[in-house]
Length: 240
Image 1 (cartoon, one colour):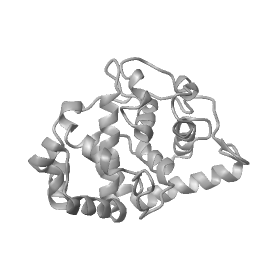
Image 2 (image 1 turned 45 degrees about the vertical axis):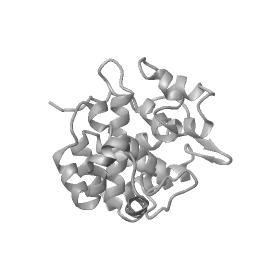
Image 3 (image 1 turned 60 degrees about the horizontal axis):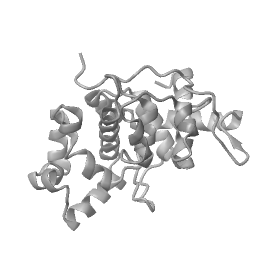
């Protein structure tokens, strides 16, 4: 029996929307082939890290592969963009400062021992009493964190997986965690528009039609859960 909340079963595709941008459509054969290559490359390059942290945080590896595909296309060493999103999982330092100090409070479980041991060697300041009390880091440690997120793929994947588990628990309803809510929370913030759906069920189409949620964020639903989206490609082509 798992320690964390089980993810609700998601139909694939979850809703009948295809991501389209200009002349590009996820339904186009060439685009599907390109996207399939992306997820295959992610699996080939990073599966040991994906499997390791997915197991510890009880996240299906296919889900984590899909998140990496949507967030970065599997591109390595992506420095922070204007929103401070960095690396394979496009993690932000603000998110880390929210997730780790509140991990036990939100998930009702301590940080798994394997993760604590890894962080104690890689970034011990993330486990310090001061950090867990104040959520603040020195400028030196902030710089170290940026470097790790940019250059250390395993660390970046772990931080992304921690953020996903945290969001699964934060946005769960009636004893189940939901991908659609988590996608919105991951891209925009757990405290953005998605908070109004925190304690109630909502379909992916309802979220997609909610114009208060930024269009860029809603597009992530189509990219991941829509028709010919990444999750459908992963499952139908047995990428994992």
